[in-house]
Image (cartoon, rainbow, N blue to C red; front, side, top):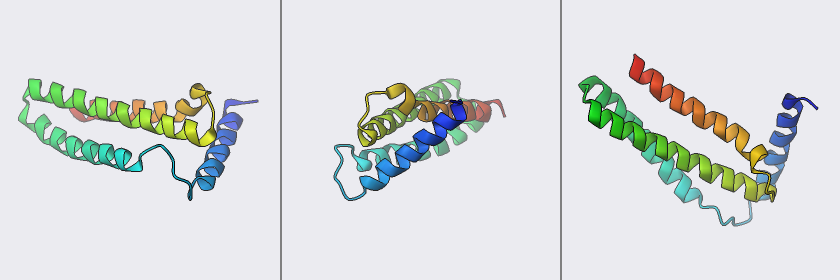
Length: 114
């Protein structure tokens, strides 16, 4: 079975699991995820301002903070999806979230290079 087929099957399973959980209360906190997403947005806006200021120390500190927020968000999403699927196969669950995390970090790096 190709990787694309596996990913499509996984996406289908995730959609079914999410739909089945819409009325159930999960131990996963959506409020916590929303809070992290708001922190990411605010920090990225601040980061863009810092890049113009060219304060290297503050840029590094803020970049580390944003990356850690993205890591926290990724971990929460992986945990949520593993609970939805009722699985311990974190490799399968984490693949797309890890790719998204890497893309977010690469976008931050590209914004510095500009």
